[in-house]
Amino acid sequence: MIIVFDMDDTLYLELDFVRSGFRAVDHWLAAEFRVGGFFTTAWRLFEGGQRERVFDAALTGLGVAAEPRLIDELVGVYRSHWPMIRLAPDAARALERHATRDRLALLTDGYLLTQERKIEALELRSCCDPVIATDQWGRDYWKPHPRGFMAIQSRFDCPPADFVYIGDNPSKDFLTPKALGWKTIRIRRAGGLHAGQVALPDHDADLTITTLDELDRDDVQRLLAARSRPQERASLPQPEEALT
Ligand SMILES: [Mg+2]
Image 1 (cartoon, rainbow, N blue to C red):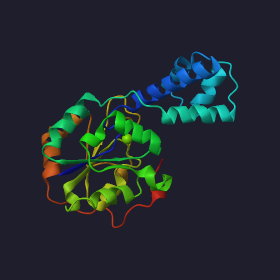
Image 2: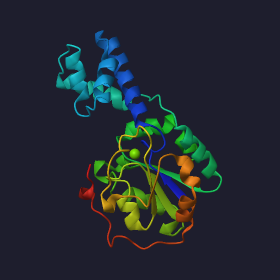
Image 3: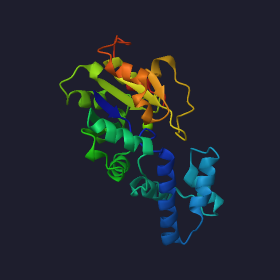
């Protein structure tokens, strides 16, 4: 079995990255402009459900003009900082358990530098090969574009049914691997940003779990052991089919 993991909210909590990024911006603003309080303000906004223009709103809340150039700088600090994140405990256990009995790989979307730094912080190259960040080819190749999935598939001399993709975002994670004949598992991790999302029928995974400890569940083991499964779609999805 080749287990291919998504990264954000599959192997660690993305909320921890957001918190880490806000801290980095907080330190930068304090050092460059002697502005304090960014972290507390931004985190309060984020926890209150704000997902768009959090930096603008936080600066405004601190009485600082949200000039586009300053916002660009803050976004740069956020995306390029060395994140203080760690594997979820169940993810650490699963990687260790499956490293000895399966082949492990990683397929992740997001800005390349940001994702590379997360990969390094989580030491994922020590257990996953290949490690593929789709942004190396540009935004057009983020999931559900098939290129990343096919790049992984081409690395192994195995039928599609030997692959399983484990991810958390039903908008983009499962459509393509299902079309390729892979198995799919959705993790609805407590605190995950997409944990409450209702999946459209085509976009749902074969099975859902809430922690990676459940990979040892009987029905999961039966799914992984099944030799092959029918193609659910005749053709691969086009990128515009992604909902986000
Ligand atoms: Mg994810």
